[in-house]
Length: 242
Image (cartoon, rainbow, N blue to C red; front, side, top):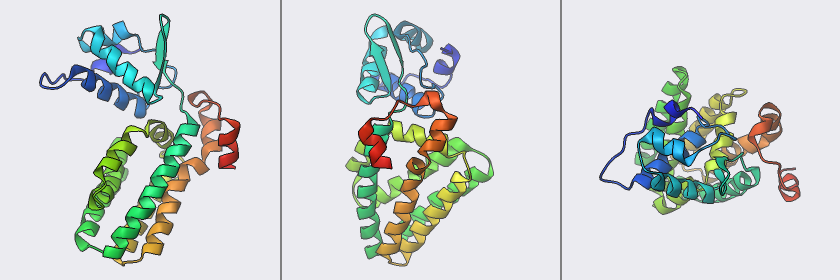
């Protein structure tokens, strides 16, 4: 484990729970693949790197285990868990169902202020892609979708989905640099914005279906390129994606 990578961007805010901050920090490193699947996470070494006692690290790792992002073998080791494709597929289904409903409502209302906010997020994404800034591109991808949830007054749903999307987010992180995926994301976001602005719910939903289906459709390619990053799928999961 590279201790420098753990401590480089961590700054403890004494007004907040240390355990929550360690959780957020480690989760970000895992979801962005800065900590790859299989990376050992010694509680003692993490605490040392972050200049903390082991207790908040233990609590943070316990939360990450519940999300399926780390696996803890008591008295043995803790490591970053491989990507659970079954969990990613289930989150995909939930997110697709919610966002189909959201864009249906937004397109029916056709609020020009919402369209402007979505266009602003899309403009930032384009700038990040032009600058080859993958991290920024993904950040503003999330801003685009967060704007839709906020407009639909579903922020509690947004936070619930974000908190359970670690495995899906890691798959997308692997996929975005491949085969023009980032450019396709821009095209799909533009299609969603245009359809909402035109008051066309059917077209908006069609763009959402296209947008959210891409990563799982490329699962075989992702497995071939990153075989050590993913857990074997259950028979049920394989049939569901067939």
